[in-house]
Image (cartoon, rainbow, N blue to C red; front, side, top):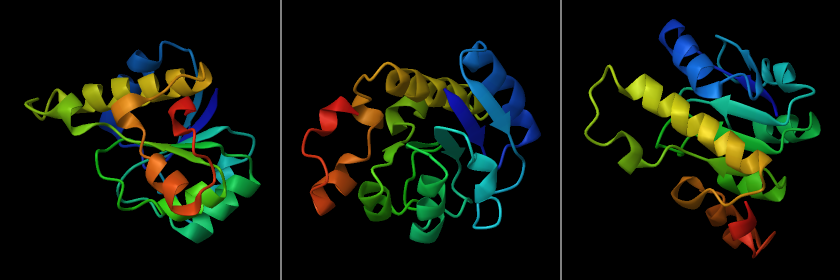
Length: 152
């Protein structure tokens, strides 16, 4: 899968590379996602974001126009993502379930976030259900786009 990852900090590069095992073609960008940087997603299928990224309706529509089908956040929090706009655009959303990082030390968290993010990409690529990481059902339910959200 071709992927763009926004807001990448130096400490996240190695964990993402290790977790990815060269499966996905990931472009790492230190800039945060915004209306100005959405164009970096051109030609990609998925965008990896973080809590400081602008994943508002306007940005989601831009991402959709560029071909983005999936948004994976490297966090448990999804409040920065406009789930309704994503549902309208048929963009699936995934997060890192809280139980994945519960009890980990601050040194262990970057690798855990990277592993779970890559795991979500793998499942999407294999057309498998994301289970606890799937947060698009909220958008699907609110706009009645797709009632079979277990296929995410």
